[in-house]
Structures are given as structure tokens and as C-alpha cells.
Amino acid sequence: MSMDRRAFLAATAAASIVTASGGAFAQGKKYRACIIGDTKDGGYGHDVHLIFKTRQDVEVVGLADPDEAGRAQHASDCGAKTQYADYKEMLAKEKPDLVAVCPRTTPKHKEYLLACAEVGAHGFIEKPLCVDLAEADEIIAAMDAKGLKWTIGFNFRSTPLVQHAKKLIFEDKIIGSVLEVRTRGKEDDRAGGEDLLVLGCHLLDMVNFLFGKPQWCVSDITFNGKAATKENVTEATEPLGPIVGNRINATYGLAGGVNAYFSSMKSRDGNGGRWGMDICGTQGVMSIRQNIGPEIFVLKDPSWSPGGSENKWEPMPNAPESPDQGDHLLRYSIIVNDLIDSIEKNKQPTINLNSGRDSLELVQAVFESYVQGKRVEIPLKERSHPLKRWA
Image 1 (cartoon, rainbow, N blue to C red):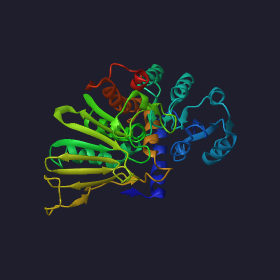
Image 2: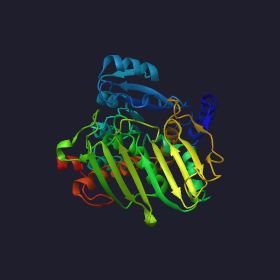
Image 3: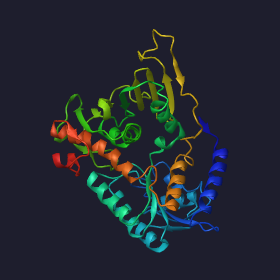
Image 4: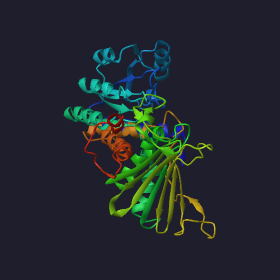
């Protein structure tokens, strides 16, 4: 169930006033926010430069983008007071409290985040977190050393819909005991390795959130129907680090002997709206489709098949209102509100950089297992990118 933008913004504004009144930013003082974007290299993600517009206690004081035309347009969109070609100059001059790191490409994410840590800024970064686990470890250590609070754009997991789904699964036992978890990527033109990284990271974050971090991974990867080789390693269609394969099947071992599966396969039929997860239990199935939603349905049938049964798919019961994920102004509002609350209460955001690293680790585990030709234990001992070592 989506919430009307006007109603949600009114509620958000009220919440922001309440939150600010108990913290260091009472008495009308505002957080100083900066935006790091790059029109020609990763752009602004899903309009990440707009994430502070729902907050009355945040003022966007600067936007940096090396592209002049893109800089002007995006600064106008988010109301940035000052424009910069160089993000380092912006950080040095503006000394922001908050930074939004917008580019969706990952090669400069570590550079951006370490620069933000240097000036003592909290913030938000577009997913995926970075290129490999070694970078993630360095970034998190730098932020932790200064007590900085950072969150990442896992907007589907943050919705009240998904929070409610978790309660129904584990407290209300709506589908009985969980037997297996099936996830599929978006399977568009990026099907395979790039799908795993760009869109699979949302699903793998959901696996971590709902079931806890898996204990192991085993995978199989092919390219055009044949076993993938190191010669098939390539860069993604946008700079995200190396990938391999246009068909991926991976199995993760969850606690209690339950398995979770991820698959993405290039086919002539393309994306059929399968992007999401099915959680199969002893008494039925819960289906979560990411898309714009997420949309969540339940089949109360232990056979998992409504064909010969009176049981049919039904909307998730008592679904709470959630901000419309297709609304670029509201998409990250819950995450941003939680970030600022975490700053004022000196606690980690609910969705934080550890969430980003944990999701990335499940991506890397798929490549690591295939390169080694065996099941690998999680957490991974080797933190560098397995495809860089292989190729």
C-alpha cells in the first residue's frame, strides 16, 4: 500500500521537527549538506541529489560535478546554494554535516567516502557500496574511527511493507516453517554477473535482513551456454568492477539447514517481472516482487500450487502504508530520517555501511566459489576481488 506524497511529506515534516527538537540541531539550526555527483560517470543514481528535500532541518549548501551542464541542472533541482567542479574543494570549503554520494558506479566510491571521513561528514551513498571487500573494510574502519554515521540506498528493505512481512513470517508463522528461499535478478540486458551486482545486491540484502547472513555459498556460472572462463571476465556496461557470465546459479546456506538461491539468466524473453524473492514454507509461500512496489502476496497452500486447490494468491494481510518507491522524492525518505535520528542519538543507522558490505560479500562469494571450484565459507577470508585475482 503506497502513501500519498502530500500525506507522507506532512508526516515526515512533523517527524523531522520532533527529531530535531531533542538534538543538537534545535533552535532552528540546520544541517549543512553537500551533494557529490558526476553526470558523465555514474550520474546521480535514482535522484539521490534530492534525498534531503523532505527534511526541513537540512540545507543543501553545495553540489559538486565536473560536468558544467549537469552541475547546473542538478544544483537547480536540489536547490544547492553553491556549485563546484571539484568535490574535494567543496568539502574543504563547506565543511558539511551531511553528504550524499550519488554516482551509482563504484570505482570512486572509496575515494569519495574517505574524503568525507576526512572532513567528519555523515551521509548516504548509492549502492553498491564499492568494488570489493578490501575497499569496504577500509571505508568502514575510517568511518568507525571517527564515529560517523553512514547509510546506503537499500530502499526496498526499509519499507514498512517488508518490515511487516518479516513479522508475518517469523512471529505469525503465516507460511509455517521456512523451507527454502528463491531469488531472481531482473534478467534484463544485464542478466548474469551484472544483474547479480546491480540488482541482486537488493535481494541479497533482503536475505541478510530476513534470515541472517548465510554460512556458505556454492555457485555455477556460464557464458553463452558454456562454463565461464577467465577470458570471459569483463567490465560491466557501466564502471562497477569486473563481472563474468550471463547465467548465474548460486546457493547459500542459511541457519537451520535452509537454503537460499539466486539465479539470473539471459534469455530471448528478457525481463518477465520475476525480480524478487519467493519464501517457501511448510504452509505456503510469500512472494515479494521488487519492481516499483515492493508488491507482496501470500499463498496459503502447503503444496505451493493453487492449480488444484481452493487456495489462491492474496495480498499480504494488514499491509501498512509505505512511501511510493516510484516517487523519487520519497524513495529514500525512511532511510534519511533514520540516518539523522542516528546522528542525534549516536547510534548506527538501521541500514548502514555494514549492510552494504554484507550484501557485497554475498555477491563476491558467488564469484569466489566459481573461481575456486568449490563451496566457500562466509565470511570470506580473501577480501580482494576474486575475478581480478583469477584474470
